[in-house]
Image (cartoon, rainbow, N blue to C red; front, top):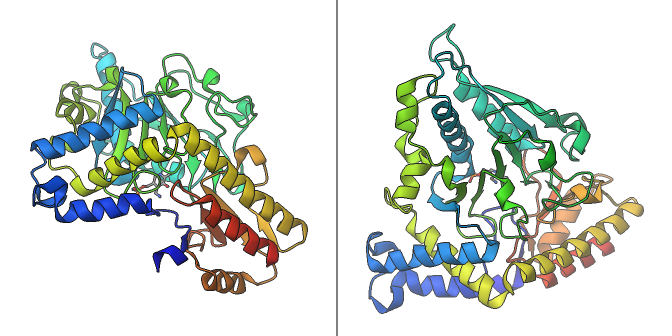
Length: 403
Ligand code: PMP
């Protein structure tokens, strides 16, 4: 039964039980209409109430400033690798509208794991010139990387090498596969993202997919765009939240007419989504509905973002201290050594002495599920998203101590 299982999945990940119970009812009969939520028009008053309520609650939880739009987009984080590039290049082009010798801008990627690598690769791919020998659309470069350390740590402030006039700077706040997470924006840690080193006026983009809603985002206003797929802390896969500073909502068609930028599919244009209140085309209604229920639940039952952050911090402490203890006994190896670079959402370790299978079998027998590391790196990964309770984490910690 569900209550005998502790689900440590990396995403899609567990959702709060009360939310699922409510969603199950809504799937059959939304708010007494006799119609399920997936069978109602996305332009009707019921869905309008759902999406507007979700936006209001998200703004409240994260204290999103009024000069930022909140978009409910589709295509996952992966689509944002492209959309961010396309919209910000169009923005750049329009800023240089009268420049007859428009030159491809650099773009600075901070590469700290698989997801920022993928975003960088997509920028390289979309930069390919429109014809052999022609100018590329942009020149993506790596401003800092921890690849030589196999993505098990973060760069320190003096290891960043930003270019002076990049179209944007890009980083991934929490790398889901290895489990490295930047300390909260503005923190004094040597691993904090160095906002002050980014040249004035260069937009900063952050992929928050796997840490969104796990704790406050103290410096939203230092960012141009923050985006996150729903399927970790927000809801089922399907919707991706994009928080974008309103002055960056540009008409990409105008930029395309000037030349020197790639074509932008209309679905990827942030301005179109914003102008249409995220209803330019049929949105992922079920994912938005469940996300709306999760947001209500987080506000009403979990003490808002401060309460959530406190629980997540206690969960992280419980698991890391059990792991550090087991590591001291030679049982396992924690992948991320630097405490300030450790993720509170995805905790990775490797079982020593060829005992991984034994560890996983023991875990399975105790109801611990989906602990296998990402297929690209192996090992063990415990994801402690918001719906994973402190009790579940304590149970896992006890198992690790006894192993
Ligand atoms: N960024 C991060 C940090 C992720 O964890 C993931 C997926 N797990 C993605 C991007 C890609 O998201 P999607 O699968 O929704 O395209």
